[in-house]
Length: 197
Image 1: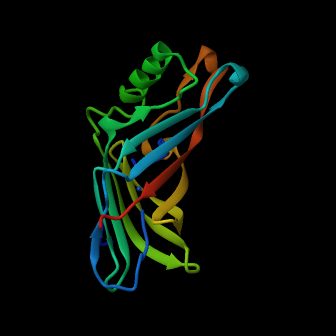
Image 2: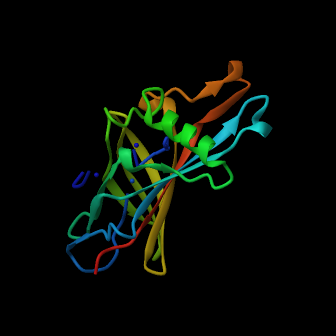
């Protein structure tokens, strides 16, 4: 949630979290600018009383990562699950803290036990000058599963997303009030990557 490389929602994601592609014709490995590169997980509400629940937006900085353009293009990155933060600006601070505690705890990410989220690409398919399909392995919650990422390059940023299921990574979607309020199994994992100069 890295064949020559290492997003754990999504989520997740979902994530969820990370992923990349060739960024230039030069054959070299380029590090990511970790001060500007982030992983984001979007979790969506479900259930009979979902109108009274909230979607969740979760974000963490990418801890380290690199893009390889020599030979077979590849990407790898790593996120510290303990640095994931619930943003949810519409929630009161105390409610947001509750969501954060649940997410970090053993019921969901168990981030003190499974602190590493990583992605390692297996193949990169160029669709056109700005679009790529990246297939790779995402490690999240101690589980590694294949994911497919769609990616686009624009204005110096490389942005992409993938949809994954929490259960595939051993995470049971949170459910309360007898299942009348819960989150969906599917989460969206997104990334926004900037390469270091």
